[in-house]
Amino acid sequence: MNRRVALVLALLASMAGLARGQDTTVIVIDPNAPAVPVRVSTGPPVEIVREAVARYNDSTVSQFFGSFTVASGTAIEGDVVMYRGTLRVIGRITGRVTIINGNIVLGPLGTVTGDILVLGGRAQIAPSARHTGTLRVFADPALVSRNPSGKLEIRERPQSLGELAAARASFQAGRLKATISLETGQTYNRVEGLPILVGPTFTMPTPNQGEVKAELWGLLRTEKDETDQLPALGWRSRIEWESKARVSGGVGLRWESVLQSIAGRQLTRDEIGWSSFLFHRDYDDYFESKGIEGYAYVRPVPTVRLLGSARYDRQRTVPASDPISVFRNDEPWRPNTLIDDGHFTSLRFQLDVDSRNSTRTPTAGWLVSAWFEHSSSDDVAPIALPSELRNPIPTYRGYGFNHVGFDVRHYSRINQLSRVNLRAAGGGWLSGDPLPIQHRLALGGPGILPGHAFRSQTCAPTSFSDPAQSGFCDRFLTVQAEVRIRVPLSLRDVIGAQEWYLVDRLFGGDLADIVIFGDVGKAWLTGEGPSRVPNNRIPVFGEWDYDIGAGLDIGGLALFVAKSVSTDDAPRFILRLQRRF
Image (cartoon, helix red, strand yellow):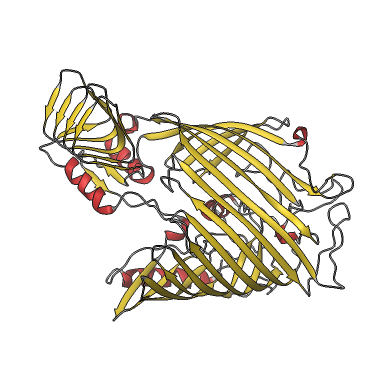
């Protein structure tokens, strides 16, 4: 870090203070996000949450904190509100029923005369039960917390690394809206340190429920590259038109000079950033990408998005720098992976399907992403690799290759407290010339095979020394499964009201998931020859790596222990800041 960092932080603080006097909100720019996400869900509508909170805080209602049963022969006159738990009705309720982050079970002899509102749960009504009134159910949990006085209040979503110092100020001139943003790049890494994004965003409505958005952000890298291979300044710019009609879609153009992640990321940007800053462990590799991209997308139905894009960029190796970390700061950073430099033209087609009932805590539905990409180059400068790893990349003619990828996830509920989540992911080389290093793969580590060492599968021969632990595999395939069981922690009785209130605001209180999981995966080289798998086959299952594990997840903050089944490795402890998948 140097004086440039201090200047940037001072600017952040001053702009945040200025913005507080105007129309100010905190936002996040995720440089790796798609042009438009398939669906965004951050909880029930805010007006519904306010309605539910107001009912809970009303002193005239029957209020319950935790599960309760209205027994047979029991009658409650008036409104009933419950926060966290299951309300079982075998008797009779005459009045409105509001459940916040819980469930209602209306038994065979149960009767509710009044409207029912359920947030963050579900309603189970027996065929012979009687209910007169409206029924509204929102599966997403409400972001609320219970203060020491017993009242509910709406809480903010826990901040990510990218939101710790961020501000924006908006101005309106007729139909044109301008927003000035200043924020971090939602990560921290060993190449550029803490990237700072600053710049304007302009939006203007167009006919037929459309909108034009133009963004121009400068990117300041707070860590100096002593070799001068990576400029201190980069940029991200985009102009896009989107239609929000019945069949929505849009087109856009992107021009940028940024740091891209090498294929095979296992953790989220936030987790990589915190791991780098706190523990001197960067679980990703990077290369500089400078170029232009055009794209178009369409949503034939709300849960499906089809995307096509064409990109031309210069991809170049960048070295690791020496940013600070809280722990292990005296240790050297792992070198950044060398890539095959060159100018690349890429055509990409992608399908996204999202039918989940919640994007934060799904209990039902599918999340599917599948893509195909063709890339070519006329000036590739390949890194020399052993013949066991890769056939020579041609430099005497045009170089081109095809690769694919998929990620399929299914979420289902077993009962009121238990859920089963499944995931299958894979991809890699499909046809053409060998893959460049920036698209090669590795497995092993906290994200996909947590019971195994970081990048335990790189496909490198034992005689090949590579301190960067680069991935050299052509293909990979993984399957993950987990069972989640919701349990109460009863922290309020253990740590006190004030401390519990803080925990509730940060992590969601005294409800947690016990997670039991298993993972299996394999990365390999394809083709003919020793240590390779024919193109039309996958490795035999005896060659795959397996692990099992368990842990406790409190609002996304989770501690797991995982043990390899296929090796004699000792158990590994993993701290995650977000759900496994």
